[in-house]
Amino acid sequence: MYLELFKLNELPFRLSPDPQFLYLSKQHARAKAYMESTIWFTDGFVVITGEIGAGKTTLIETFLHELQTDVVVAQINQTQLSPTEFLQTVLVQFGFSPFEMKKPEVLATLNQFLMEQHESGRKVLLIIDEAQNLSNRVLEEVRMLSGVETTKDKALRIILAGQPELNDKLNSQELVQLAQRVRLRFHLAALTPAETAAYIDHRLEVAGSQGRKIFAEETYAPIFKYTGGVPRLINTLCDTSMMAAFGRNRDTVAAEDLETAIRELQWADLSSPTNRLRAPIIMEQTLPPTPVASGHAVGRILLASAGKTVVERELRPGRMVIGRTPDNDLQIDSKFISRHHCQIVTQPDSCLIEDLNSTNGIYVQSKRVRRHNLNDGDVVQVGQHEIMYIDERAPRLRGSTDHIDTEVLDKPATG
Image 1 (cartoon, rainbow, N blue to C red):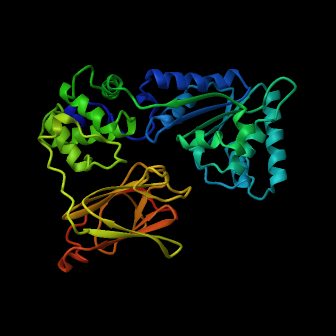
Image 2 (image 1 turned 90 degrees about the horizontal axis):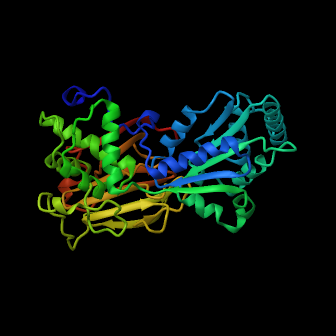
Image 3 (image 1 turned 90 degrees about the vertical axis):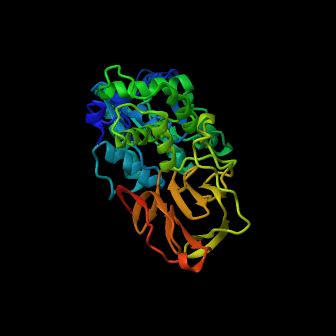
């Protein structure tokens, strides 16, 4: 890798939530303070929301890393559970094996454990990440757990973290009682341009830059414009840019390297209303021109569920964003689909599907992938749905496997 060339001790832009790399913007510092308040105040929930990649998980890991030893923690990250499965998962976090227990026994065990911890002078904290995926029934169980109390204090402290849809759930009529118990609610917005530059420099400093400027000054503005200040997207673009500079054997990232990274990632403004990555003005003259939509479809996709086709769409040059919310070009209303799950980028001579840092990912031939160049007949698993690609170009291109470019993740398919 490029560590030796850039004289760094470790990779500065990994996507894993490493607490030592946390950049505390004003917003992140405030959200962390709200989390810390749960240790001292037991009345009500703390809710932290933010877009995908905003830094919620890194913030949680940092908060947990700094907790004192008298705090007992249950951390739940898998939230697509039934009420009983959820309660069992909480007990597992506390060291129990509850899988043969029925719900009344699970509840009794939890209550007894909470009271014992309180009597021993220990604080018990429940953190639920990706809480937007919790069903209303499970959220009601969370509310009931928060009611376990002594004569003076609540026995369980609760932090809910999730995407903006969590606020929509909490504001619904069905969860009025839960919403009334929320003591603090904070939304993590994207970084500002100045914070984006400081974020990049901070991660490089932690990685061992010792104050050296690795990114040229003119790269900061376009990095912000392409990523919108979302930390995870910043990491992806900066890491790819450093690889481009490494390929040219230079120890600073120039505008040319950034342009190369943008082309490799295929982050382009194709004038889609759902495009969240804006093209920087200074790059417009150097990037390849946007393909002009032709009169004929390049291909089409069939969206299927349980073996039955539910939607068919033509693909013309441009960008199609697929996700759970109505602002997508193709909406899949399913709890297994992220708000903006994946995108299909179509050009006259190629068609690529790319994961947009979704929770459940996309799979090709049972392997989770970041991106995949689609060939005629390919089937991509997206949540509990399948997308089949049909190439509508010349017959000689159909079924060709000469140009397969798939980036596979380490994580294997689990179902």
